[in-house]
Image (cartoon, rainbow, N blue to C red; front, side, top):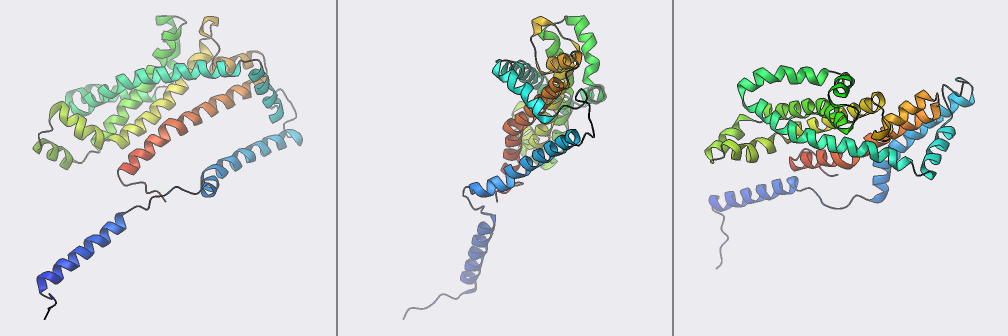
Length: 298
């Protein structure tokens, strides 16, 4: 006669297996694409409504003559006409590309300098004591302060633009990485040393991956400083050979007392900044959070 195995060991093994299966089921994130309708409602509709609200308030200020001087506040359609004219004349993309190419290239240079500098400050006590306060002070210094000395040292050329970007972005990138390294649990470092991950190997395989959240935050802040530094340089140091970027467009509008052109430049600067964040830094930040189980796809 067949018998059923009801020994305590068998029952305990079955209970443990069931418990493990239940925990695995709890940790399993259901895969599947988010419906288009939900994406539109959750991601697209809120910013669109916010933009429409701003435009409505802007138009109301003009229509009800709360601000009745067009030289102070042009109507949204007047700004749109200026943007449309720039597009039809083939100038709009040139304004954007001149600034974006400078900003991204300068940011890449800042990345190459700020990353090893941040690691050095984070890992070497003497270097931190010497350079840590200087980096914090440079980060709090307005970027516009570097434009006059950069013009004197380098002249009115692209090198001056890149120097201002570097001086604005490198401290933020380095400090972000220092903050990320400081938050690495000591257990990770001890485990890495036990497994033989020391020196550069430990930095590459243990420190940098564990410091990614703080590093990405520093990158986002570094890009913001890069973009602001570039706009300050283009506004102050205008020269025909440098081309017309968005900062120069803003200054041209001010010199011509053309508020529609001024608003055109402001809106383009804002749109480019938002686009870079949405296309580069937000996906990078989501990837880092998701890889650590901090962002669950719903």
